[in-house]
Amino acid sequence: MNEPLFWLKSLVKKWDLDFLRESCSRQNLKVLFVIFFLLMSLSYPLFASSKRAMDVTKDKDFFFVRGSINSKPLRFFKAFESKVLNVNGVVPMVSVSSNKAVALCTPLQVYAWVCGTITCANPKVILYVSVNAFNVSYLWTGPNGFVSTLKNPYVTVAGTYTVKVTSSYWISATTTVKVTQNIVAPGATASVSGSLSCTKTLVTLTGSSSTSGVTYKWTGPNNFVSTQQNPVVSVAGTYTLVVTNSANGCTSTTSVSVSQNNTKPDITVSGGALNCSVSRIILGATSSVSGLTYSWSGPSGFTSTLQNPTVMSQGNYKIGRAHV
Image (tube, rainbow, N blue to C red; front, side, top):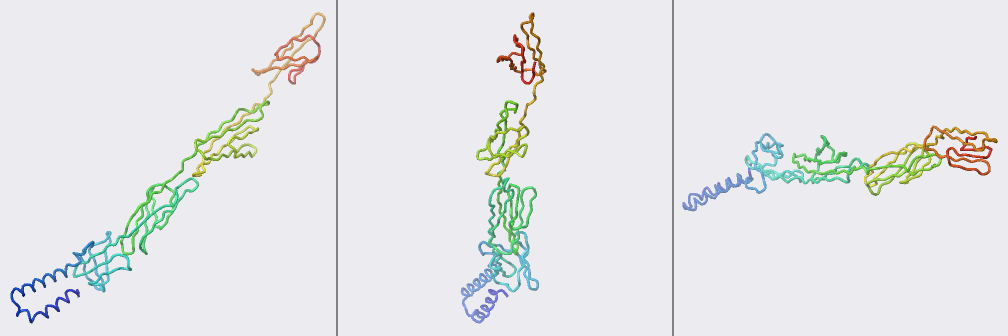
């Protein structure tokens, strides 16, 4: 029974004998007082501040609240009739009187955060959540249809993630956390100083990046490896450069080819015979390769850079490895 109503019945019985002896004005005052007290007793929950009034029906050992908190029906033990119920010291608290119930909805306090940023070196981060209650469930949602019921899930995609925390008494709260990423590649360019040849046996590889604070790694033929930015090489082939941004672990890759021209030109030489009537001979040199330079040598220290020099002394004349 409602405690204020029980007290009211006792009060009325006590005043029954004296009621008729009182003056009309005093009787009227008492009647008004009783009516006011009765109304206040029946409607107390509706006047409680920061509370929500809801219809309640009684069935066996429970109150069934036809209202709801966060769209979930409420059910409370009948043993707590006319009491303020504090479930496990958390929420909700309910005051039941007559056919009304009031839920004192102390909201869950939820805080979510993330440690770190998604990078190439760290492709996943952990979402964290803290709540001021026990026995709660978690529902995370996020980009690309992400869903997880773990308290602290791993994620690999940047964006805004929402966590809904629900207590065992159907009180819920949501909050969001933003995951950022830094996966910008540093950029890489590579070049070579020229081609290898019979006269040029070394060339320089040049690496560069638009990002500061990067590291370089070259690989190439014959297991070539170098961490210098601009190494020197002597073997033709393809060289690959990997530039790594130490800030986020992201890399950029490029390559350059070192060519080599060690092909010897073909050459044909011709001479002649000196005699009494022929005192001069024109040495001849021909090749299918254009753009050649010539260097003749011969008797008595003879030298010439002409393709076809004239000589007046007999002997062997040499141009490269060809003899005449």
